[in-house]
Structure formats: structure tokens, C-alpha cells
Figure 1: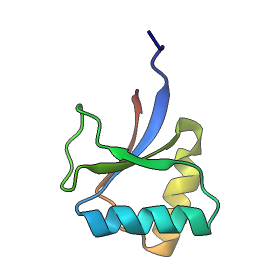
Figure 2 (figure 1 turned 135 degrees about the horizontal axis):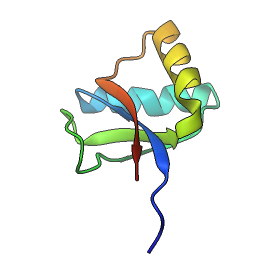
Figure 3 (figure 1 turned 60 degrees about the vertical axis):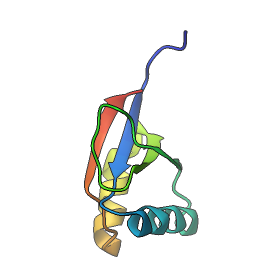
Length: 78
């Protein structure tokens, strides 16, 4: 069984916002990928962005500066 590790999870209110996040991250060389939302969380579209937990400050800063829409950003064990 794989040990759980902390992960940065960004949730979205709708699918277009999730797709926009994927584009934003590719354009800005930010790590991560779209995943189905973890069962412990709730979000409008069912998609979330998963990235390394130690990138929380970087993601928050860049997303807020660019006006990227998201529902929540948090670190959870996955």
C-alpha cells in the first residue's frame, strides 16, 4: 500500500475554470495535473488540480496575480 503524502489541491466551481487552470499552469511552467476531485472534498465540477504541497505559496501568488478563478486551495494527504 502506498503511503499517503501531502498534496496541494485546487478545486473549481466549474469545468471551464479547471481547464483554464491547466492552460495557465502549462504557460507558466507550474507542476501538476488535473485529477478527479478527492472524495474528502466537495467542488462544483468534479475536477481538481494536484501539485506538490510545497508549492502552495507559489501557486497562490501566481493564481491571484493572474486572476485565475478557483473555489479553494488546500493541502491534504493523498
